[in-house]
Image (cartoon, rainbow, N blue to C red; front, side, top):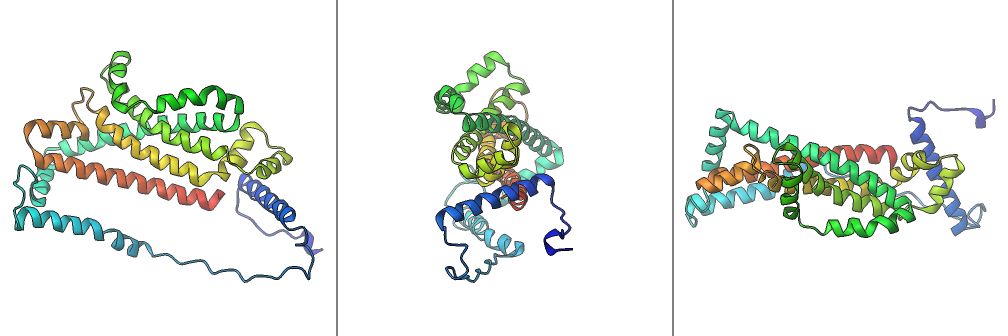
Length: 306
């Protein structure tokens, strides 16, 4: 049998094989257009490939990333315990914040506040990101929809988050729905903006190659266009997730009786600065944790599609 007819085993999915074939064909076509003599044996010289740059291992990355937090913690202890620049009411020492966290954990309130806030953020982010992905894809692929809807969406994007609170209270009430909906509004616009902008700049040769393979509509979007814009899409998703955590505090001002945003306002009203700082630290840790999980998904998507 001729070597041209041998096949090597492959573990890739059909969709990823087609997308890879489309990308290879588009790149080959672009190379033929940019260098019509590239096929001649004597007209080109093979350049040695550069070795990939090796990054830090996960343990080293964690160590480097911990330098600034540890330095800030040491500075916090220095100005509160050693130098006593701030009073405990203005800035409690780290140990006071830790003891406040232990007290809330032993009473069961800490787990309750964290779980309900995490639930609201994830649910609101899922709704907002899904809507942003759908509408961004529609406007990014259709010039008619873009001209018709983009000015209106851009106007709503300029509305401050707290401006939605009275309207949501009037329409939805003070239950969980209004809180989740406000978080979804915060997550929607970064995802919509990133997807819309990325799809407007997809390589036309890649799209034409996908159509030559028989892909149209939703199949073209899922197989060719979205895989081509994986990095900017995930950038929008990570910005949307950050916005969801920002909108959480505003959402939990809507007559909430639990959650980290409620813990913030309650601690302010009761003069418990230690609990207030604890809530801020927990928001930062949960936000970083969810962003890291989304980063893991992004790296897997980049390996598969980009």
